Length: 162
Image 1 (cartoon, rainbow, N blue to C red):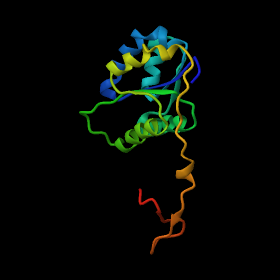
Image 2: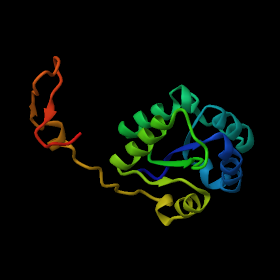
Image 3: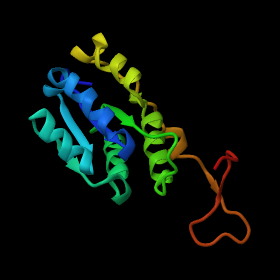
């Protein structure tokens, strides 16, 4: 990771106020980084912080997936995602996929104000960081075994995984 980090800020509706308050408190720390946000969160943050936010789609409209794709492509260094654990979400699979991509590609994740405070105040924020990027070469080149009755291109892994 470079000195200037690429940070994704995401918040569910019931957590937007918490994220905006956190971001305002940490405005000067965030200002020299590249900040991405989904939908309405990005609009609010840009207005409240007074600097440009790269705004993506709203989460349920694909914004979570856009951020996940940026994580895979190395375009996001870490994720601050204030999600609401008490609110059932119709786009819950998208939320889980986003969190999964952050874990798969070994980027830091903060899911609440306390963890976001620890991350933003870390000495690692003010310098380069050599993040260990997992090597998935073995997974990508694993042999696939065609199972009985499987359609074209479908099969089961020899590893017995999903």
